[in-house]
Image (cartoon, rainbow, N blue to C red):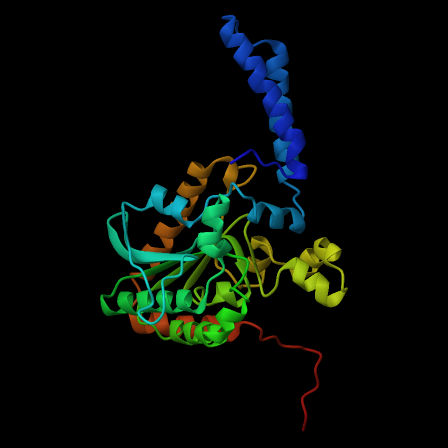
Length: 325
């Protein structure tokens, strides 16, 4: 895939290219790094810290969608010792937008489910851009039931713009499939963890995210609607997406403050796509801590805390309200 640079990344990338060129010349001529090279490296380091320490919400949206950002299968390759993929929903078909199966994470057997977007055109079409059909949600639920049966923790990786909105999906019961998953996940008797690695879009994400712990990458997003969709509804103008992103508060720090997610997973400076290996290690560390915590808690308590977690969401108290007599 060709190099992709977001607008706010371009000055950094141009400087890094200049540094790489100077370093290559120095190596070819057997010279030591000169003052110019050292100054450029300092400048690049300062620029990276300056740009990525003050990202806007819209810029984080762009990072969450970056085409070079690691996807589910990238994380599986890096942090799982073993992965046996299982296919199909046993009712209609296998959905390529979601991968799932049995995995081994640091010696622990788990069931892993993750949305997969795809990179090249052919793969994107095969994966339906990470937008699941009803059979995808039913496959995910089948795997959760399997995990419950064998008392294995469930880990889900979330990265989707939303559930597939096409007429075929509606004909096959898209809304029911999402609702069935949400209800079932409140009751499944095994520890469950969701990791939002990119986009967490609408019910398409929530249908595999009603878990005991929700971990979220630093530059991921999680929202009931995309900024573009929100802008189209509120202002009848998708060009207002940047303003919508600010109003929606869809970034990891926002959602941690609102108690929608539990843990923000730090990313390498510049985003996960700049250093996929370091990003994977951050996911490994956060996932290990969550699994160690949850697997020590009795399952009845896990279920009680899961129910309380979601019942608290959306509830607020107005101290200025006057109660009726």
